[in-house]
Image (cartoon, rainbow, N blue to C red; front, side, top):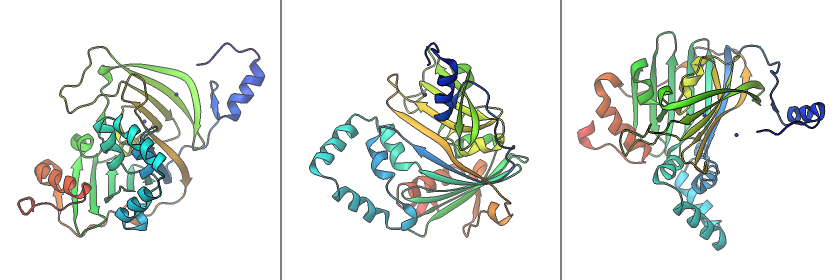
Length: 306
């Protein structure tokens, strides 16, 4: 399942420079509120050697394993040594994130209905969410085998089924700022989140981000927020997230809206087509979890999971 300034020597020249860079402290006029159309998103892990390499893989071209082998073979000995040195410095969680996260997503939105279409290295994923009903449908299927799992979920389980990181407001010092930046043409205001002292993870398998920068745009609907991999409670649509996992802020995850196209969206655009039985996450959580893990790791569920 989201980066200060010095005393101005000359206000007008500096303002012009900031505007040219897409950065401003002055509210910017933006496009009309978005209610229907297609949004393309992207996810990256800046500084992560696996991310730099795997972002060059295109699952839609098929045979991901061959693409990986071809890419690895193209590295020079010096590049291989650099890759190994950088990889050893990464945490296991960031390595797994680079291997599992989809790099690009397409969101079809019409009012309170949204369908996300995305691909990881080993899987194709679709997620339909109805904000009016607070319920949705997920389809995950393998790129390499005839394996898939589909299941419904409700608002109570949305964070479990999609978002891999949940930001709890009480754990963070939240500071709205006056900084704005254009994200896909939408003026977006920045809010910072800083982990409070003592707000440690409840268990060793949980990693709380030490900080986040969150950009929101009033023209983007809140229903889009379910589509990003980090749950952050915001009243406006989130256009960009930067998540920091270490105090040095070297281990990052960036989610952002890359483009927005306002256009009619049909019922077919919102439909998730599945040939497998549709499970219920509230009743079949363990079975769904085993199937999801098997597909994402490139394997098959065992007979006991059927």
